[in-house]
Image (cartoon, rainbow, N blue to C red; front, top):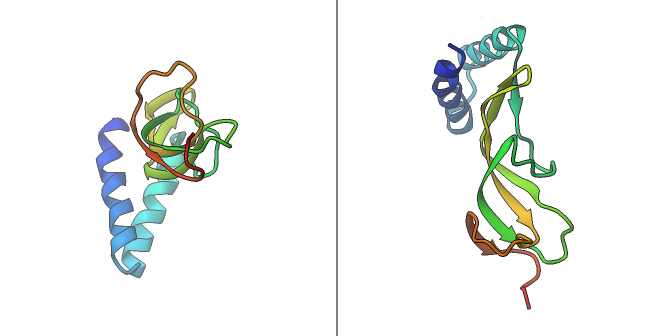
Length: 116
C-alpha cells in the first residue's frame, strides 16, 4: 500500500519545488510526512552521501579522476524504505572515478578535472 503512495509523494515534492508554499500545501506536506513516518517509512538519498547501489540508482555519472569514491551530488527523485525493505531506490547523479571494471554505466559526463 505504501508503494502505491509514492506517486503522491512525488507530486507533493514537485508542487513544493515549483509552487509558492501556501499554508495549505505546508499542512498537507507535513501531515503526509508525519503519518508515513509513524508507519515506519523513511526517505532514502541525500546529497553528499557515499553512493550505495543497494539504496541508490545512478542516473548520471560525472567523472572526477581525483575522487576516491562515488558521491551522490544531486537527488533527482527520493527513494523510500520501510524498515529494512527498500520500497524504491533514490535516483541520483553521482560524481567520482570511472568504474574499476571499465564497463559502461549510466550516462557519463565529465566534471571536475578532465580525464587524461
